[in-house]
Length: 308
Image (cartoon, rainbow, N blue to C red; front, side, top):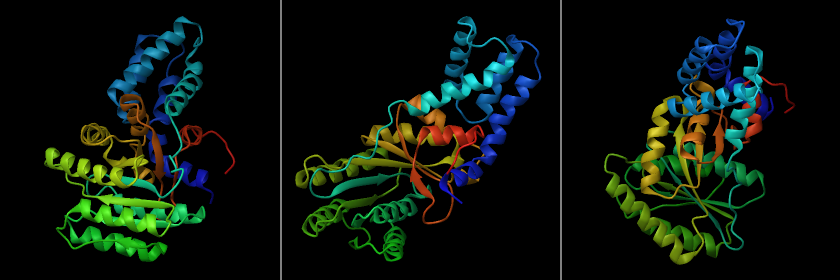
């Protein structure tokens, strides 16, 4: 099965909550009226698109009706597909790659979202692209996090720079940057602690890590990726808002899209936070994390035929 087919299959539950609800609303009306628009708004909100994003889409729909771009209920679905695809495409850019020396990717997110697994799968992806990869275990708060990253390192065949549990995360990062530079590693991927209960501590820790990286490589970290669990729906948006106050995030990774009816949150994250979704995970397999392509996501979400 190709990745588009996996994505389409993974979005089945989301498609039922979003696309099928929209279709039911449209079929139930012969003409466009206020009741139809109210029902359409409810369908969007219930699909975890988010209240702000749903209201924004409804404003676009009303503008489309005034401009005669929407004349019948049947015109609503293609209009929404086009508008949602445009939203998902806005401000997207590819992963920044260093011109010389290692590309440094800092990975952040609360515990339990699949952060370490994401790092393992990123390592596998880049190795498949012919890149040399190194991991840094800078989540020194939990011994389990260090062990888990080591297991992924062995599985993918990637060296892991680590210190003892409780040691200074910035010291781990310093050693990792030095090692990656000396060994001419292409991609250095750094795990960080996922504590949100004390935002001030988190901010201080992340700032210190970034200062250490920049002292060695001026334009690094090249990417700071926030990992979010799609199954948490609107809570993912709240987490993203908190983390943007603690670190300059360059992109999002959405995991567990295959196990949720709340995949509409991807649209909400993009529209409300103007933050690019860079990677998506649609399964447990080592190859089930791939770069986010907005057109493919929209096609899978609305069951549009497309080749893998």
